[in-house]
Length: 272
Image 1 (cartoon, rainbow, N blue to C red):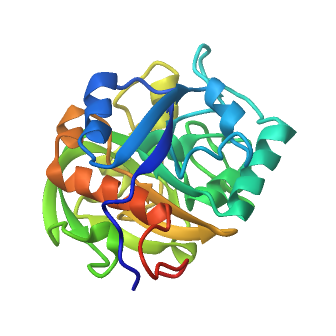
Image 2 (cartoon, helix red, strand yellow):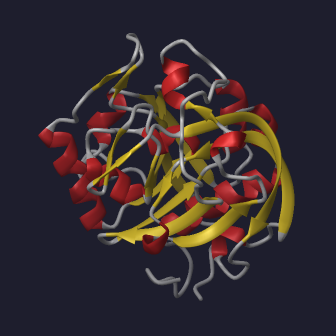
């Protein structure tokens, strides 16, 4: 397994907007990382950097955004990405640009199925279709105190992280493409409809409701890795608010994920 070089400086572009968050507390996470320079760019302006030429100054792209959903209407309107954006992201994957997706980023571009294939899963605000089958809207639950277990203690992303630790954060009942990802983290929470609320109810004015929402049991995976094209992809589901931002375990996971996605370190290979 390759060695992660923690002394090599990295430049990270962080795409934000589309979901409310406490910016200063979130920025403090990245400010705590030694040797990592970060630049915040809001959607849709960040889309201008999603091609190999424009993204060249950055070693890793971090997504904490939710493009493709217009929350100004109830239910929200869905927006299709431009052909140029789709081609640019595909070219970035072919070039090997590392990407880290956080929390609500898994809900991005609901009308572009390939985006979910890049991340390794999907969160839907509306009943939809996923991999050729109809699915209900996904579930959410705020302020869940739960036990996180590390599924792969040998992976560089989990280096220095306790085998089990507690978080209080928002969890999702969502679509996870388990056969296509390498598990990193699982949650001890119960992932069934009785322990979550309907996202569709929420965006149509009925928060914290799961009436008439027969969502099947879901995956306990809350963190994973995969490769797409020549790029390393990491997804970390935690990250809703300041309590998680302040967690030393979360910060270590995120810093490790960025360094792993950058393929930094002597002897590092795509399969590390």
